[in-house]
Length: 299
Image (tube, rainbow, N blue to C red; front, side, top):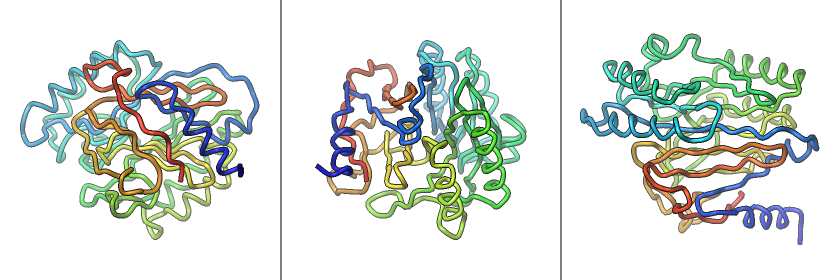
């Protein structure tokens, strides 16, 4: 069995429970240190005000209540807080967020105009969350006039500085941005950071810090848990929307990467140890053990 085949076999066997996907980041395996387990939560694409109806706001209230009860030290919201820049929805979002009772850190999506994000959520947009041995870099890479993303020279320089500091402090890093950098074409969405918009520079930077960065986290796709690891073993993961998800039949069409066979609205529990990144799909109002799974198809 080749090294590549061995790794694919390991990933295929790592689906230890229904709805649970276990990833082994290259940088953590190479580190060899014992690190305490970290627990946090991922939610994305809440789209309050969707179709000018109250459904999304109601679901966000339910999601916030479940996040409050779920194990996790903090919550990452990966963008599209409201739908179509509906300003009146931000105060409603923030009111329901109070239910969570733990820190919530957001990034803007393509439905979140930056002036409104800065007014209601945070300024500056790019920020860092340090939690024990983990550093999370949050930055806005979405435009309201496009589904594609971007990374400016200023953002890339900021990212490099934060990764350099993480290395000096012996932290590992996760980078959170709404739009994925990974190229994806039909049958996928076809929404990503194109080479001329910073993709090449990002991957060069990630290669430089390969031993430090363990994953890129994204929202945007409404496809449940969707991901790739064909960029030097780096995990690039998209997370399920709390409003709706669609089954695009990616596995059946042999699309690169993997897409777990679960598409109900929900959020994700993350457990990070010194050797594993475990993602558990939590359908809203349902037991996570009821989720369906697919073996990981690492690209």
